[in-house]
Amino acid sequence: MTLAPDEDLMLQVRDGAGEMLGVLFDRYQIPLFNFYSKLTGDRALSEDLVQEVFLRILKYRHSYRPGTSFRAWVYQIARNARIDHFRKFPPQSTLNPEMLSAVVPTDSAQAHEEVELLQRALQQLPEEKREILLLCRFQELKYEEIASLLGCELNTVKTRIHRALQELRKAFHQLAGDTVLEKAEAAAAENSPPPGGRHEV
Amino acid sequence: MKCEQIAELLPDYLQGCLGPDQQNSVEAHLQQCADCSGEVAVWKKLSILPAEQPSPASRARFEGMLQAFQAGRSSQPATASRWRQSASVWNVFQWLRSPLAAIAWSAALLAIGVYVGLHMSGSKSHLRDLAAMQSELTTIKQLMVVSMLQQQSASSRLEGVSWSTRDPQLNPQVLSALLHTRRYDPSVDVRLAALDALSRHGRQPQVQKGILDSFPEQQSPLVQMALIDLLLEWREPDADQRLQALQQTPNLNPIVRQRAEWARSKLN
Image 1 (cartoon, rainbow over the protein chains, first blue to last red):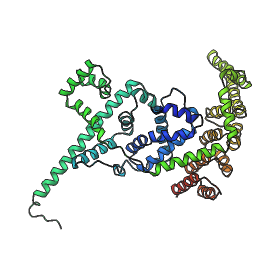
Image 2: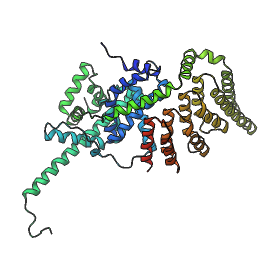
Image 3: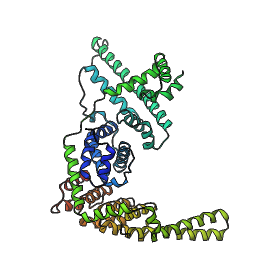
Image 4: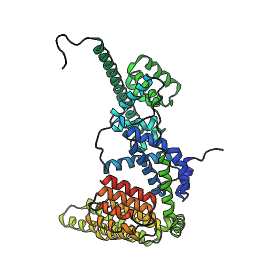
């Protein structure tokens, strides 16, 4: 048995079979949640936005046209939902990676540290760079689909991806370098006695 | 190959979309260039980021929302089927034969007249004439919206609502037609669209008042939820009271009740 394509299910939803949206929810809930949580660093908000996306799918179901990629359409809705949210409630604090209570596979302390560094590096990127990386790396959108989503040329998308990747590499190496330095400093501080004649009170 | 040339190919290389020749060139460069290979490494490393799971309550929230939606639909089966029927027979040729199209054609011809006029002459009296023609054009557009909002078919009325959003300013006649549609239109979808259109002009006090006054009459959970969101957005002084009153409505859909509770917590 083959799975019904997303597009067929959406057409059924459009024609009144609202219950078929449950299947699409099962397919898209986790990718959308991850898109938002990696973008905003806020789990509660990400869950709210996922609900908003599915509410909008129902509200605007008549605007879905046969032949349109459902994935591209739903990410268009997802982007708009986030933009509208931040228009109504401007973010009050900068991104805080600690808000993400990620379930990290702790095979080793080093793997754990790498995940954390990468998350921090990703969060240091400007939002549009983080977004484009998430769209192409995790959301399985084709470059053409991203171009139409962002309203730009295909070559612009490729350039932007390359620049985002350059910046991510720099941020990651910077953070990794800082961590190594901090560790070295901490080790040096433990091993060396305090400077002679000066005692902390 | 230089880094700039590689930069053009790298995004396709990462997706495995290059031909064998280009693939080999990129790989040869990567072996020599630490920066470019670092980019590929960080791209690959992104896969270690764990896929996070939303809370189990998320699915239940979705189910509730879907039920609320279906409850809203089933309360108006006649409208829904009428709409589907009219949407299926709706086509461009029918539209072109309608009186509505006549208005549209008049507007288009007038627009052409204005355009030609602008390019033919620059004298003051002509400019005055043109200003008069432009104002006439605006009036025709407004008439068209009002007329579309009164059509039998829900899809024409939806079209009318979407036309009304093309003007940055709401004229009183269009405003009153939209408010009427939002309040009394038999189709939930048209009411929701009208609410969306009106909310763009939420800064105008009479728009806010018109929307909020019809709050208690709305029975559809979807419309109620959209209204709750607007109350939260506008942060009117009496928003909390209105939400509290809504929560006390007997037989209120539980999802709407939850949404009102959530909005009140955001307000305080």
